[in-house]
Image (cartoon, rainbow, N blue to C red):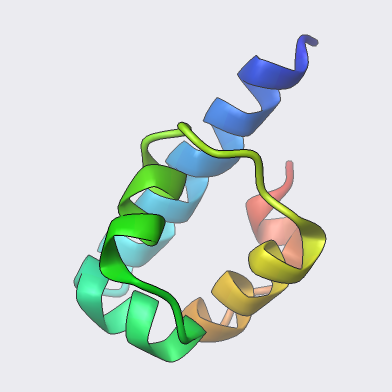
Length: 70
């Protein structure tokens, strides 16, 4: 699979997990200590994620890394 497709799949999973938990972009961004606009770009698949950022998001959503990267 192409890396852009992988980024998009991770982005969609992050967004779905956030919505399942009924959290706003602002709430998750605050928990991750990042700007809301940055999280919005992540959820849109428009930015290349680091493992550190993915781990921060997983922590904010209270999920395992394997829940995001499938």
